[in-house]
Length: 163
Image (tube, rainbow, N blue to C red; front, top):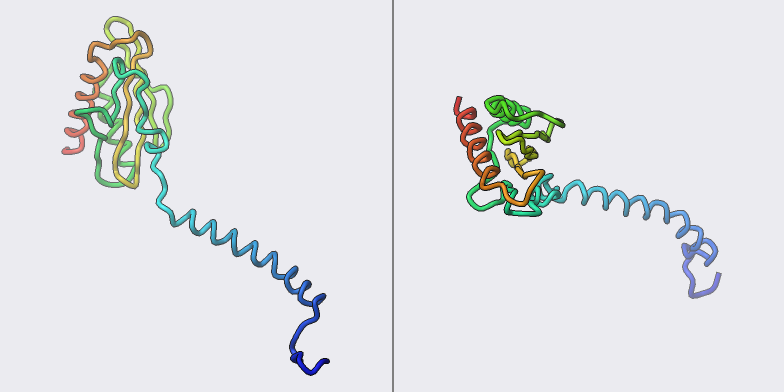
């Protein structure tokens, strides 16, 4: 021991071993911190991830971000929102369910002229909202059919929610 060293000082080799031993702890702490921040950060909603179910062609498509339309709003949990949506859609015999899940419904609406329109609903449980998109699968113009359909769906949904 030298006159200037403390009795608790570690040799360079021992310091290297201490740093090596604490590396996994530091890595684990960094991973835990990253995970914690990811869990605490506000999650993007399904609709935000889907960019409000975008319309590639506004001449034959509307969505819940379109002018004059807004997401469907419900009270309660997602199961209640989905039940209201299904009860609403029962009033539209031209609709056929093609895919579904706890937070999403996809349907095909058949028009009187034989055209098919795709309608997608995505539930946002945190905001108690249902985003939607209605688009024609054929042709460039829908002559307002998708908008009038979704206005009718919104009105029927609101009536169901009041009952």
